[in-house]
Image 1 (cartoon, rainbow, N blue to C red):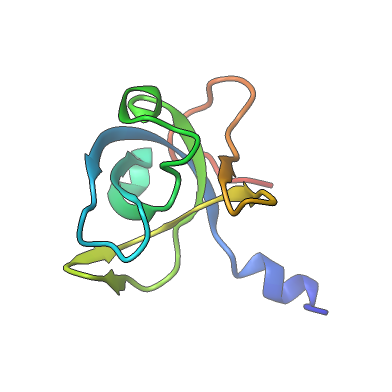
Image 2: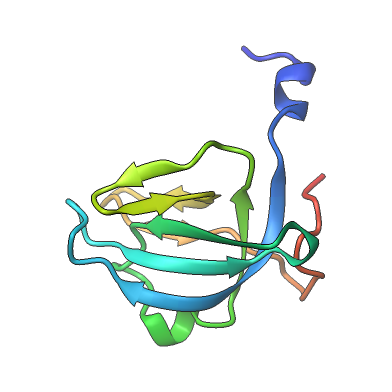
Length: 109
């Protein structure tokens, strides 16, 4: 169990994917994402979402991410946020995203 104070430390925001690149150096199939978080700026993330999403579908898609983790090195890439999704039975990730368009950087409450 975590406390409410623990949960309040997590900064979860909406952002829009502005670039998607293949990530052949990753151990598991992944994309390199560049995400616009409005006033928080642009952050990059590695995401293992290749089973359900093509690059074309991801470009300009709004997503939900944790933005206050320290950067994590994955192969030769530094991931600056954690894109959130639901883990399926076959380890495929279904992205979480706003039902309606929201302002980039909007805080999840």
